[in-house]
Length: 308
Image 1 (cartoon, helix red, strand yellow):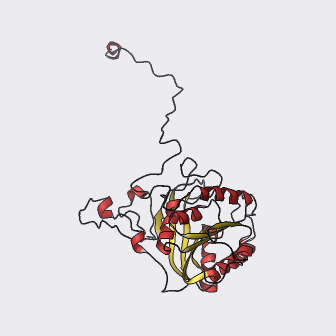
Image 2 (cartoon, helix red, strand yellow):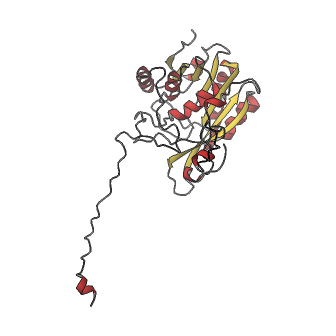
Image 3 (cartoon, helix red, strand yellow):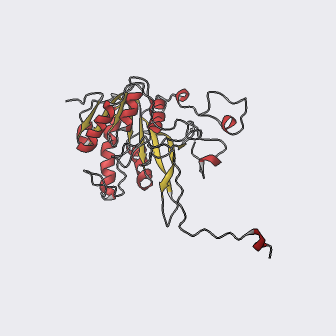
């Protein structure tokens, strides 16, 4: 039986993807397990490298099969297997890589014997090298002329996002644009209002908004074979797209259904739309609590004593 549209389907992605017809999906986004030992409730994230790569090739081949001839496939992955999955997608499955996006985020994982990781890789693959959807006008961001220099000549429509090295977002004179392949979005941290609280790998809605706006039109079908926290499906619904979701975990699937039930088409996306201009809101608002020192304050001597 074919999978119903605008629903989340619980089960193994390989078995459920096989139920989708050929060539019906406009846009697929996948944020699969990274095979780095993350603690999922039902999935083993400690496969051997060969087993993980073979499994990845199988589900990616299914995604390619269900894409329309002008469809796009966006893949989020960590450092460990980014290169291998890109080779599988382009050399073995015949996709064209339009962009290798670096998602730069704050609040990265603190490391002691290496530079702290503050990025992930997002590949933009297309089935046809020339015929694909890319809505540049839907993803423009402010230019440096506007952000830094206050130049009246700045295009009010902004400019297109890039793949550069960045130290801190506030030090980047050109800003981050949607026409470049380095994107700055804060991670969805535990204190953020956007945080669902039940999934440790939650994608920001604004990041998915950029992908869905750029690579699909209203009423197009968006596929996510790894539902996770449900962000892809939530954003697709808010932006007026149809969707098909797959999730292995019964607990996660129930939470995703609850999240989707609370959303209406046209609802605003959560998170800061322009991270360089605004910040994400926290659950309790912005608070700064300074710790009181336990040390005894120094005794101030009278001014007359100081003159002796």
